[in-house]
Image 1 (tube, rainbow over the protein chains, first blue to last red):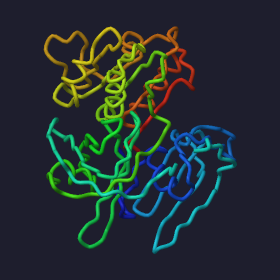
Image 2 (cartoon, rainbow over the protein chains, first blue to last red):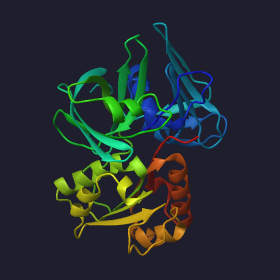
Image 3 (cartoon, rainbow over the protein chains, first blue to last red):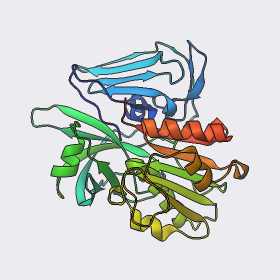
Image 4 (cartoon, rainbow over the protein chains, first blue to last red):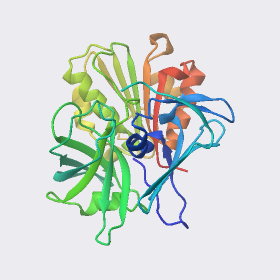
Length: 96
Length: 241
């Protein structure tokens, strides 16, 4: 499936929310591919598997497929994890 | 139940070149918990200098067992796929995390009609679903439309042909080179192809579309245009800008 480059001078290939399931599943303890995320900017509610994801060696950026705004950013670097919910208004997920 | 079990060690059991650009890899992962048809995993490679690269791959196998099958297409500028397609050999170790994702899955309790639409190596999760359909002896009506550049680029062509029966139909689109005698001229998938070779809206099928981003976007747009409700279309995209 997804391929992307790690060097900053090479564009990151865009994939979908499936590529964020691993890292975000570990930190959030939920299946984000079935979780419904609502965008704060345009109000679109959609399964995060359908979101646009940019992934590189350090983390993932999840973008709203409708309006392109950043929903959330996850970075793992130097033994620290950083999670920012920029435009994710809410997340509605099944109990596992 | 843990959502993600962390990284598991796997050993390459078999590596088969099946297309000019791709290989099927069978991994032996002793701690693999099994997976649903359509799920994926993350695969991690660690270089000698410690640099790590992670990619997601759909799983062609399903069910219980510790044997995990992937089909990997080589992307020329990739840093992982050339290694997996050209270099990795049986006995080599790598790490996997999964199974991941319950969105793009099919369970044998589903009885509704299903349309599968694949572009290129997007066939992998759909093969898993088609295998699960056969293994369950499901009578749910299945139809698959598989778009490839040329016949030699198709993964699982002979296996898919063998799956064809009263409840599984298979249709092909060739985008560059069609086999001799094939009725359709080679070219990208069109609205007419989808109208002619997929289950109609009247069947209210659940539609699974997997392929490169541009392919998936084009197909999904046509499906919606034909009247399929957006919530009946599940998509999985890879690559592309």
